[in-house]
Image (cartoon, rainbow, N blue to C red; front, side, top):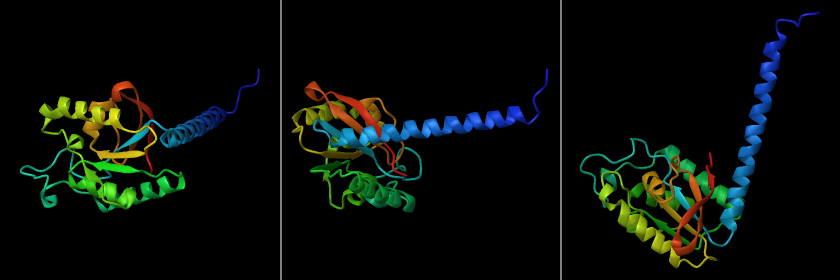
Length: 197
């Protein structure tokens, strides 16, 4: 019996890895396409975590929500990421009738760069880091807001990862969009995820 050349197993391994990478990329592209489609459908909204803002998950000691100089803010990379997201919304024919944001400056700036207009502050979208006692009341307020929405209205909520996790159980990356289906009584469920990069 003839033995195989010593390089053949390595070549086959490389081929297998290449095929796996193509399949994964194809699956990810399909998932992204499904998420964009869901976002255009009635009864769906978008929750976006603010774009890149270096420095951890909270804010410096002594920060104030009304003073951007005391907070973590968007980096230049974060601003560029938000602009790319705006372009992706345009290319995918997604426009928002209403935009709400956390009062934190990094969320306000993300919303402005993504939509080109000032968003309305919504206290229920505030950061929960260092404010865990507000978790239950903010989640309840958001579900009540979702229950009141007209299903045909396209809405973007710009907020913090910790709040999205509390509401939907998903921990998004900075700049990631979580597409949410609104159920009975405003109960949210995951319909898809989008990360423009």
